[in-house]
Length: 261
Image (cartoon, rainbow, N blue to C red; front, side, top):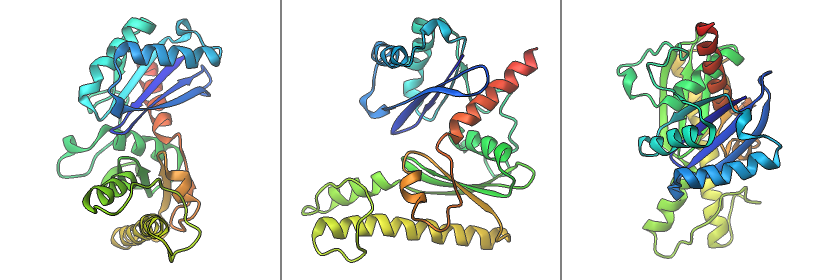
């Protein structure tokens, strides 16, 4: 079995793929807790056991991270708990195979490239991939699978935290869909501004991207933890694919494996 690890600035996702490419287990944790190798190991071992998966079942591990400081603990997790030398996804990994048509390819986050690979393989381009993470990213993949650039906006939770920190009388809120656009109290007004304001931002960005790209038929795929919440109410989002990044990691691993055979 393959253990795929997608480590972002806010969350880290562990997923186990069986031999047929099915996901046997998927678990999410916060990367802001700065967990150690042993904390990850104990937590993950319990979850795997509840899904009747043994550490001995893991034959390969692939890791993509945008948090360099946490990579050491993930490498040690692979070696200490699974006795596997992990594949680390970067611009030099042979299975990535994504052509990047921007000014400085080395600056693109590996998560965005993995998303581009998965989207180009699963959906017919051109495609806009919207990833609702710590930042909300808009990435454009053309008909030939080339990564053509995109846009980066503050993530929804960053926006909420900034609002709370900068305004003394505004409380910290949790994001959800408000019942009305016009709030009649502070919390409802904040929820409306954040939620519907974000929906409007996404719809406006997608329209501008399509106009600039020159193709109104571009498909729009949303991924990330908050994709289901926003995708259900955003007319600009055609498809919600919560496992897009994980599927990209699985695809990269398969290419590496096939190249060795």
